[in-house]
Amino acid sequence: MIEMERVSKTYETGCKAVKNVSFTIADGEFVFVVGKSGSGKSTLLKLLLKELEPTKGRIVVNDMDLGRMPRRYVPKYRRGLGVVFQDFRLLKDLTVFENVAFAQRVVGAPGRVIRESVPRMLQMVGLSAKYKAYPRQLSGGEQQRVAIARALINSPRVLLADEPTGNLDHENAGGIMRLLEDINSQGTTVLVITHSQELVRQMGKRVITMDRGSLIGDTAGLKIPERRRRGYEN
Image (cartoon, rainbow, N blue to C red; front, side):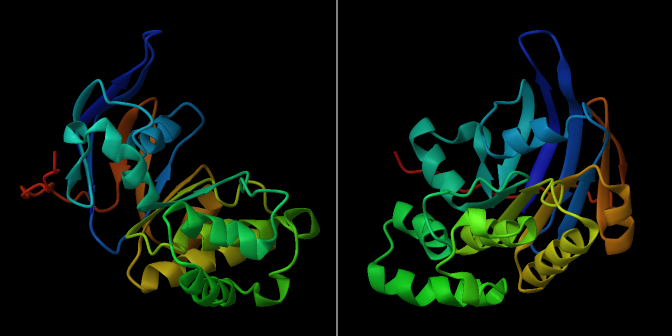
């Protein structure tokens, strides 16, 4: 579950990047956030990642109120999210296997678990035969598949994808979106930020539309329910 309730973000320059935005994304939904450059999409993502703090409003992800989250808990919170970026962000000196395994090593997964889970994940994204390859030896579509595998290896409940097809041709973009749809069908909540209207039309999913910081359209328009929030240990 992702909830934004009357969220605004004003930068120190006075720029109002997000203006009184409210929406709810239920567990297991696939949702696009669309809008032109400067519409507030990237700021929304940074707010969800707790890289930025809202000027006002409340943000809840997986029943965790980000405004009440202690600073020491933030790294653990971020590790619980799957995040995919337009520029892949793979470690160039590591193989495909090592890039995906890195995400598990960060959370202290045992070697046995890594040896079992990484091959399964690479099979899921169609890269079993490329496990020894380095990023420079892969196509753009293949690099993005590695990035998706890395984002999913720790079984996050939510996957955030920031322009995941922005650097890909039409064929590879379609392949990545089908992969995200397959991931969503297995229960993962997927939020995709994009400017590609064509891609959105082809997918036929829920669409949240931003313009100059404001939410101007939502094909679902779900009401934010009152929920009991998860607490944090001191």
